[in-house]
Length: 178
Image (tube, rainbow, N blue to C red):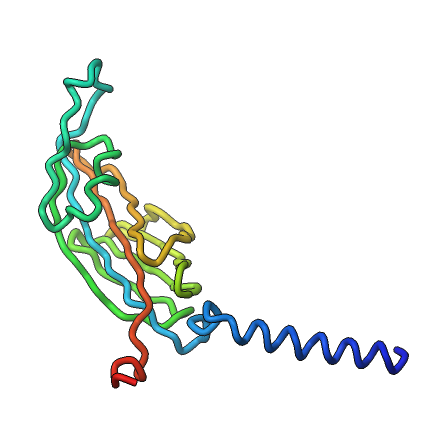
């Protein structure tokens, strides 16, 4: 079917591609047994900002709880002036496995870590109300040293914000100090 030289070239190309792809450090965290630590903070946003300030002197920094200082710049871009931490969850999950996390107000966050490398993370998120209605169903891709922020309006001029961060879980070898 193929001349001998073509079959050799195809075999060598497959070996080289396998060796190159397998040697990339980013690929090491993508196997099905790798774990990722997921940090989720539920944040209550209040005191909505109704209009744009007319002068720079009217701009006020939002009131942000000390536990949220690391994301205060992101929260400052939202149309609220006060942010309070409601809850924090920190769980370790296996890549490609779907998990559900209960939020403090009865809502749930189902997610599946799609991939994790040394620089990037991909998560599928499905955020649902207590009655099962969907709030958000999306995929997010972000730097593993960053926090992604998403939110929704609630009754009474308040909002619920989720701040999600994912970092590689330590391997058994790293935990043993090897």
